[in-house]
Amino acid sequence: MLDPVNLTIDSIQNGKKQFIEKYIKNPNLKNSWTKYVDTQGAFLHSALETQLEITSELTKTFMDTKLEKLYNPFAIDWFQASWDAYQQNNRK
Image (cartoon, rainbow, N blue to C red; front, top):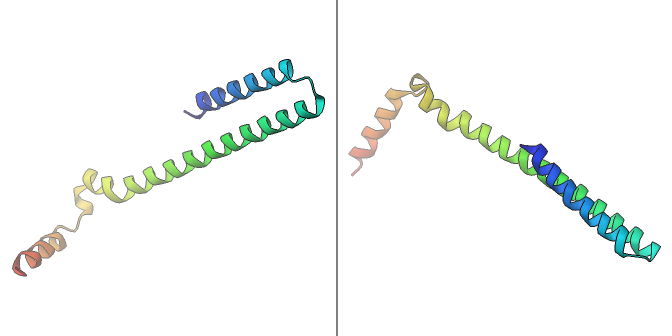
C-alpha cells in the first residue's frame, strides 16, 4: 500500500523540481526552492510512515481486544458476564 503513495509523492515532487529547473533562472533562488521541495518531500514521507504505524497499531489493538472475543467465544468469562447482567437488572 505504501509504494503507490510514495511513488505519487515522488512524482509530484519531481514535477516541482523540473518546474524550478526550467523556469527559475536565479541560482540562489533555484537552490532555495529545490531545498524547500526536498524538505517538503522528506516531511511527507515521514508523515505517511508515521500515519501508517499509528493505523497499524490501532488496528492490531482493536483486533486483540474486541474482535478476538468474537472469534473465540471461549475467551469470554460467561459466568462473570451473566453475573454482571444479573446485578445490573436487580439494581433497578
